[in-house]
Amino acid sequence: MHRRPYHVLVAEDHGPKRQEIVSVLRRREYSVVASASPAEVADTLRRWPVDLLITGSRLGSWYGLQIILTSRASQPDLAAIIVSDGDAQSQQLDAGRHHVAVADRPLMPEAFLALVAERLAAINRRQRWPRKPVTSYVGVFVSGLPGRLVDVSYGGCRLAIESIQDVLPPTVLMSFPEPPIEVGAELIWSALGADGASCVAGVSVTSDLEWEPLWREFVDQIQ
Image (cartoon, rainbow, N blue to C red; front, side, top):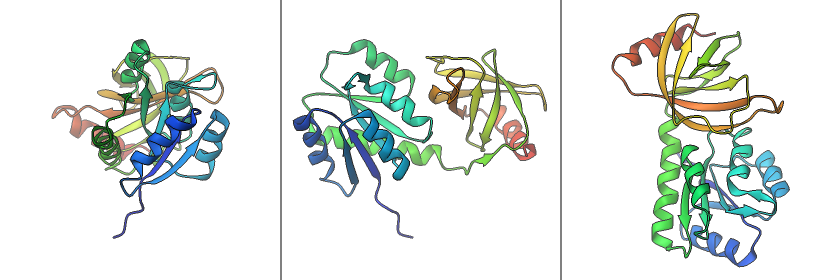
């Protein structure tokens, strides 16, 4: 079966830097679009299913990580890379917490393309189980924070958490009161909710022989 080319969006407001990234990507069979402002990024995401978002450290008054987390609110499985000028160590730490890769300039084309391929391969690993929307209310505590289940699969789930959390821990414990179950999970992404007073997050269930059969049984019960 033919698979469409991966869609890559490059968000960079510095023309020569933007062209450098685009030129390297076009050595592979990716479908590449470039944006020069946060508004252009949002417009592209509305019109185009993006697999990988590549940003500079900043885009106008926005940090690259802000662009990525905001974009994941509408496209949760979005992979991401920040291309840094090497002057943002704290931002690199924050990026790692949100499973965002960082590439430093000057770009080494083959190493950068290998990083792009690794990020895109991670999408396939996360999407190996189809997600189903949760139509009834299913409450959950995420490392003690109250929330609800949005969609679910054998591989993980999406959660709405009833408080603003700029940085969730890289691993969380999900406690479901009904049916009662506790499962460890790895944070894949998180972003501010549309209401501005909550956050949404995607997690991958930790591979554990004790938890796996319990989680599968739990997913089968969810409506």
